[in-house]
Length: 258
View 1 (cartoon, rainbow, N blue to C red):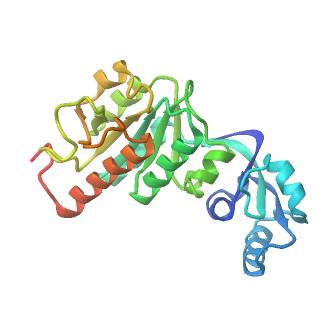
View 2 (cartoon, one colour):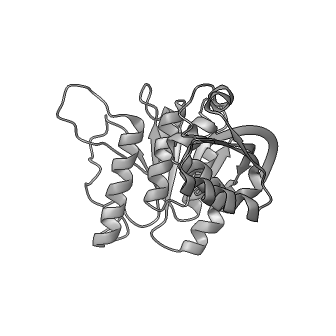
């Protein structure tokens, strides 16, 4: 993995704890509110001390200023950006896993809260990685770390120049690529069930999956909707897709290979 060295911030209790657990080498300094819970303070001090990370007690006004008024929950860390994986590392993980592997592709998800929520669900459902394009996409920033509840520190994030090329690499390594599109005739739970080695592609709420990315998918599925809103939040749709994969894996239903 590479580390760009550009400084960013990570705030919120879960994200900072996840940072200290998974990537302490990225953390330069931690600021803690003077009025924060003592148990949490002791936990953070202990983890930081083990990794030689300085911890400073400050007032809430300082945290408000540094975080830009975000919901920091009394704790904030200065971190180096980057630390992204690459497609080769992700494929190595897929090869090691052998079966029932999940990868999520976020096609032009520009809202950091949506990307963070997708990453959070991906980590919960055991995804090996989340792929996103280098352009026209949110980046794993402080807002993404916060909205993912620290999951962005635990799941491999892969930024690629070309999503179609990345999808082809995954297909060459045994991944079945399914895109979510509300216009598709086939439902998410139609046969063959989405189990085994699955790459789930989700697009933005505004435009959906890019046409060129949709053509690269092996299958396109939809989530039936009976209300009048017309579409689901991208993160919600992704979560439903991941849950369907997990349920199929647990039940051991018939997948595309029978």
